Amino acid sequence: MEPLVSVIVPVYNVEGCLPACLDSILGQTYRNLEILLLDDGSQDGSGRICEEYGKRDDRIRFVRKEKNSGQADTRNLGLDLASGEFLMFIDSDDIVSADYVERLYRMAAETGAGMASCGFRPFSSREEAGVIKRAGEKTDWSEGEVRVMEREEALKSLFYKKEITASPCYRIFRREVFRQLRFEKGRIFEDLGLMYLAVDAAEKIAWTPRVMYWYRQREGSTMHQESFHARRMDRLYFSEKILDFAEDSGPGLLAAARARYFVSCYLVLSELPGGKEYKETYRMLKNGIRHFAKDVAKDREAPAKTRLMAGLACISVAAVRWAGRFLRRCTSQS
Image 1 (spheres, rainbow, N blue to C red):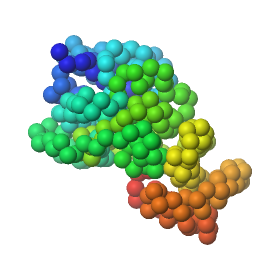
Image 2: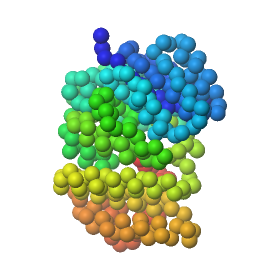
Image 3: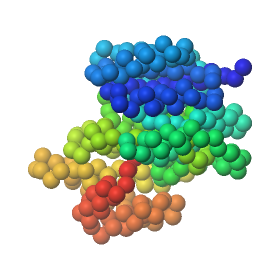
Image 4: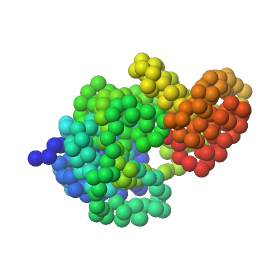
């Protein structure tokens, strides 16, 4: 029998999106699943929907939390409850292809990787019907689509924001990767604070550009709020941890970690309001950008956009702020 895969699904006030997500999980070609639906104190009908789906399929385990404690705490609960040899995280408003679990599992099993990852795309509610249709279509699979990265290459990819992203979604992990890892509670960007440690523990990562995960873009969600909040500084907090990690790991990762820190500084700066109360924060971000701008501009492994922003920072930090705001309007930054 194939190994058990635990699918961890945090749920919070997503009654309109939840059925599409759960249908895509229950329709997987890989059948040996443990589906953990963890209601983080929802105030809408999400809990009722979870209960209804639990009655239909005995692979579902539903747990209701009385009070909302955040995604990090809920994911940690899932890690504590999971009994599978492999672990996955799926956000409760997203949609996965019918062969999502099977393909990622086979990638990890056949390569010996501690983590396997795939391509992903955003979608809006008006595109949902088309995404559901695409997710259910049978597709051919080419062996040449899978690339295997060793630890340092994968960490560089994460720090440079290339193939490996900071989200724990769109991937599968061997259970031992999370033996000593948990998400840091009480912060946003907790994904960034965990994924580099997960990649480090996985040691080998299998990756395919094939899109098998679609994430929903919702207004008002944690990552799409327009108003600046002090917790946005959590991005910088975790980027500083990445710098410390890279310094302890040897020179191979330092340039990539500096690029990540530089990007975090200019992204937070682009979100920073103008008031006097943010004057000290502005000064700190400005110093961080200036400190690494020259090194990042000369880093040939860094993405072209990052090098361009670093070159601009060497001329004017204020220009970087406005350029960052323009990019936020045009693209989704992780």
